[in-house]
Length: 63
Image 1: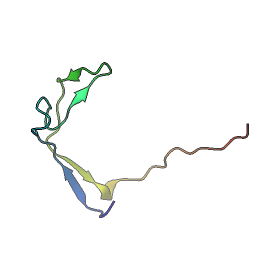
Image 2: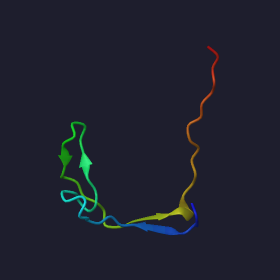
Image 3: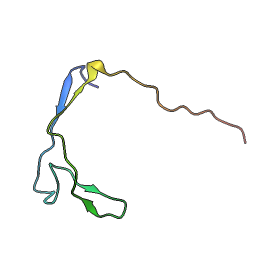
């Protein structure tokens, strides 16, 4: 994180994804494109309200 300010993300159509939906392309496990989904218009991430959560930890074992 560079600054602790709200950040907006907007996805849009582009020429390089002619069959994409709002700048995204989604495929299922069999590599078939999925078309029946929606993309939210604008997503805002407010880093001031996020609470960091610890990631997974590992414990070495002797074999």
